[in-house]
Image 1 (tube, rainbow, N blue to C red):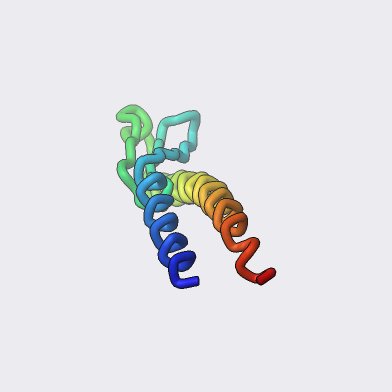
Image 2 (cartoon, helix red, strand yellow):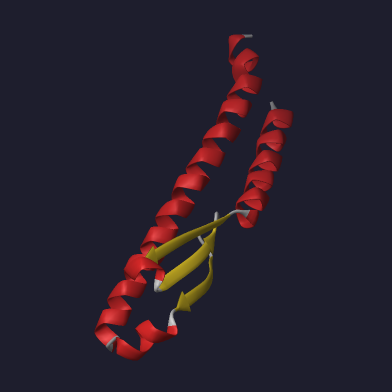
Length: 101
């Protein structure tokens, strides 16, 4: 059983590394504001188009940034859930005989 727990911990580490390498994004205003994050929900960059920045007021910019960030985080959540589900499925296959013995 200890081996299975060690394997689960190792697989979780592998999933985290994969999620670090996955890029997701959230955008608003037709791409005028773009937020890039990784699959672990870490914001990598924020891009604001120069023309939008010239015309936007502070409150509008702040509101749209929150929306774009939330979209990126939501995508990261979806990717993370998919990766974790795949890992869990693999792990449950390995645990299947454990509880029946």
